[in-house]
Length: 178
Image 1 (cartoon, helix red, strand yellow):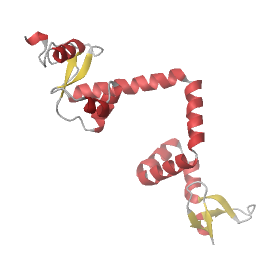
Image 2 (cartoon, rainbow, N blue to C red; image 1 turned 90 degrees about the horizontal axis):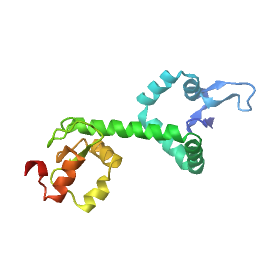
Image 3 (tube, one colour; image 1 turned 60 degrees about the vertical axis):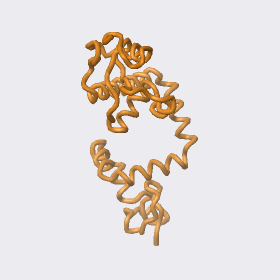
Image 4 (cartoon, one colour; image 1 turned 30 degrees about the vertical axis):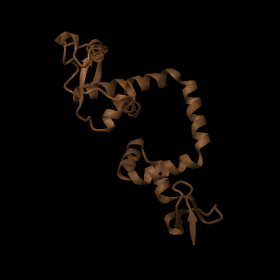
């Protein structure tokens, strides 16, 4: 005889469930693996997730598909309750991606004028880019994320905003180099 575990969603033989005489089926509601995972410490849970990435991904995708509206509602409530936390988290991730992109392209210094204040620095397309490329790559934080996903491809450099706009307005030549 088989039973479906609501934790992992799999249909398993009764031997995969712990005994429980109070249940009509005579076994626990959740399988032994799910109970072990539930009772595990957070560090043990993280280790299990790392060692079972496909199961974790499948379970997450299945749960999201089946509970899409509830997940969106919880996310919306969290964003409304903790807007400062959400904003700080987004800013932290933005800074990390930006700094990683700068480091991948030679460090946080303008290759033209030597500006080192990261608030003034940005990524420049060495050979320019088309509007279609710009839509695909995005602007600002989306560009830094896209570069990271692509493995920091060649054709980009770190410039300050002045040098970047100077190149854009001056046929690709920075006014510092005229």
